[in-house]
Image (cartoon, rainbow, N blue to C red; front, side, top):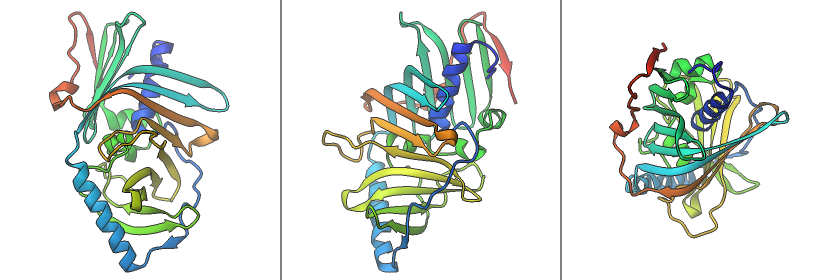
Length: 279
């Protein structure tokens, strides 16, 4: 993706990457979220709840179709963009930005390994490796292998997780579960699931690098209406970013009855477009 092209297009692309890859810059400030390791018997009970929640999650739709409002806030700027978002577990996404008349201005899609983008004004089609795209834009490579569907839906991943340890935050009586294999990028990172076991509710995720620095903290606003484990969260907030920056994603007009296939996440190239390949 060429971030030197159109300013509006560049802003849309960077906000999208922030939403899907969950962070724009290296190194956040870490704080201790827990202060008590669970005893073996209680830890076993929590682990059982996690695996039961996973079984329930696998009965839910693996597709999400929604309008996404993405808000980026820092001490220096505030930005917002709206687009049409499609997700397929574990890491397929498509995001389309339209003009006020409903005509597409920009589109990007990915299968978790490669990406495609269409720059309508320039009649340009770009495709390449999404890990390399992350490296070119100073995004931690470990995050591009993350389970974006789980992060953006507020559910547990479909992939069976391995639990390393379980800790309690005694100030809130919530649980932090270290999941050792939530990403598949091969990069060293730690992913923690924030959980309210009694409610069987996912409260968020915390992603740390090998040195324990925070890469992203994802949290979900409480749903006012009654909802079950299959209901996607409507408000996702990403904090612990540098310089007090914050990212918020609001999903509306959510549909989960559309069953996407992997082929739905390709972008047909219109006639007359030039294709640019990136490593």
